[in-house]
Image (tube, rainbow, N blue to C red; front, top):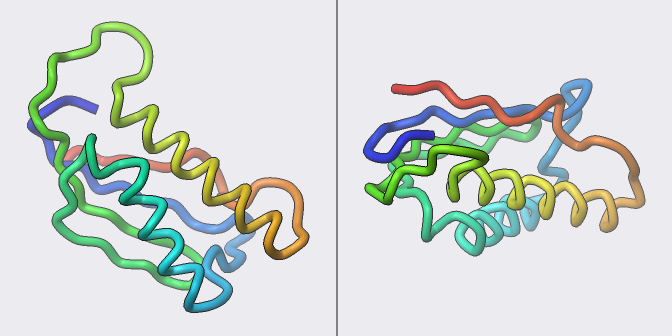
Length: 107
């Protein structure tokens, strides 16, 4: 993810399953998002649906990283892992919560 750019970030539940089973899951998702990503992205819009989500974010200007994951990419990875683990634990499930790695489109 390049600094100064807008991205549409999205994903859905594995097998189109719900990733938000109750209202408290939406709140938890946003709280964890803030915890992991508020330092690395500016949020312009989001839409959380029962089985998928959409985020419109801008990557602020930071020094460019030439190898490996950028801080924003690492934060997204850690955020999604954290959320999936909490849902799996809370609902007694195992395996992947999300269909695949999150997708991002340059806007």
